[in-house]
Amino acid sequence: MTIAIYIAVMAGVTYLIRMIPFTFFRKKIKSRFFRSFLYYIPYAVLSAMTIPAIFYTTHNMWTAVAGTAVALILAFLEMPLIVVALAASAAAFIAGLFF
Image 1 (cartoon, rainbow, N blue to C red):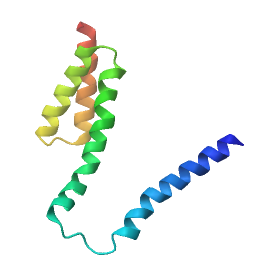
Image 2: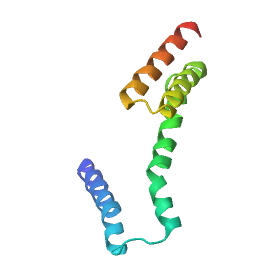
Image 3: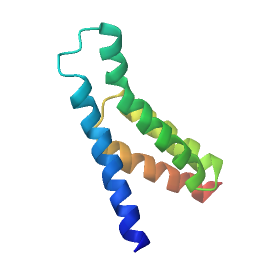
């Protein structure tokens, strides 16, 4: 029974998060500052979730640094996501062999 309650609460929260912006923002947002703020929110949230996971998953700082460095360099060079992910994983693996 408690699992059903948890699922119902999660469904309600998910629905509210998606419904509230539609009810409050019916017109196009004209504020340049607010539009740029909303534009960068997904990137900030993704970074806040990903960066800690990178450094705590491997249990080795050097493998995490190697994978992150390779990923940042390839992303800066605008490589495809699959190339960035595979190269970062390979760099972390190779660094794990030496450290």
